[in-house]
Amino acid sequence: MSTNKLARDGGTPAIREPLPGGGCGIELIGEEEIAAVTEVLRGKKLFRFGVGTECTELEAEIAAWLGTGHVLFLSTGTAALVCALSGMGIGPGDEVIVPGYTYIATAAAVVAVGAVPVIAEIDDSLGLDPADVRAKITPYTRAIIPVHMQGVPCRLQELRQLADEKGLLLLEDSCQAVGASYRGKKVGTWGHAGAWSLNYYKAITCGEGGAVFTDDPVIIERAQFQSDPALPMWKGNTEWLTPPFSRECYRGNEVTAAIARVQLRKLPRILDHCRALKRELLSLLDTPQHYVRQHVDDPDGELGISFAMIAHTPELACRMSELLLAEGLTIGSAYNSGFPDRHIYRYWDSILNKHGATPAGYPWRDPAYHGKVEYSPEMCPHTLDLLSRALRLSIHLNLTSDHIAQIAEAINKVDAGM
Ligand SMILES: *Cc1c(COP(=O)(O)O)cnc(C)c1O
Image (cartoon, rainbow, N blue to C red):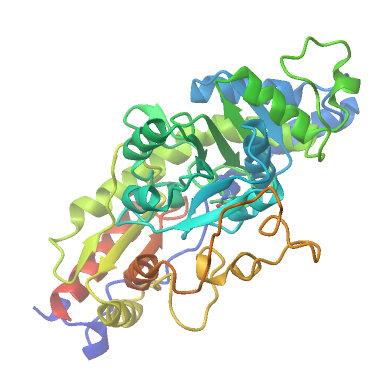
């Protein structure tokens, strides 16, 4: 059939007009967010303690959404990770296992509290590989940070079981999975603590923002101390569960909280749109010949904002990417020569080189640390191999069913014709 002729060979491209770019929450920023911000400004209520209410209302709404006990709204997602780690009592001398595929902030947060990140492999879920985590546990390991990349939950149940078996803490970096759930329970609530980011690129956004959450009253109290050195001053005579300590300042603010409250109400709309498109895409795809789909442990719970094909070899991934480009679909592998993607451990120079903030070389040369973690660019070969074979597509609010049909046609055509 002539329509099946590859565009490279002179056939008609499957994608007729350039696909629109776009994101999720950012696309819905509109009058409601503007009104919410205006109201805060008109009231001159710009501080979360004493005069404000947006932060506390947002925290209650996130807690209800997640079904979790305690939430603290913060300046960024990285701050949320730092506060979670500090809240769990992690610090100098401790090792924390992180995946080799995540935004550098996950590892940086570990360094920020004075602990040492240990980098582990990912598996075909593109999330932390439970088997490699097990292999990397040492007497100094205190916690594991699974990361749900692009809204796809990793093998959470196995990781939770492993953490329980080994007496380790589990902190879910859910910065890219705001709104996702896993086997009927929101991601972020499977661990001892979880973190959200609400930065510009995330599923919902207030520009910059983050939240740490937990069911444990001591963890949240310590997270509060970590987030504001003067907390006892703002909160007055409070009965603390643990003695206050003073660290950094990551207070959330009323303006961004007001935006986040509106965005949270729009989250179901975002999920409905993206999940429906992802289901359509999956239903339109033929049985793959040259790739396998990313393993999605709970297809009903994922956000639906991402679709990844893992080609059988890096060479096939390159060819598929070229042929798809000719069909009008721009899709590349995450790991390829030329582009240092900071979501891949290989490009976390400051970590791999053990560069501390001062010549003392903390946390790696901290006298409290007795482990001997080693890093190298090739230390997680399985991760690099998977990322060199994975072709990933974003599903967002500006895509329609018609676009998805064209994308599916392009993929089917290329997979059958290459
Ligand atoms: C975005 C992100 C963070 C940090 O979020 P910021 O709000 O930018 O500090 C942490 N981890 C992952 C996996 C992320 O994608």
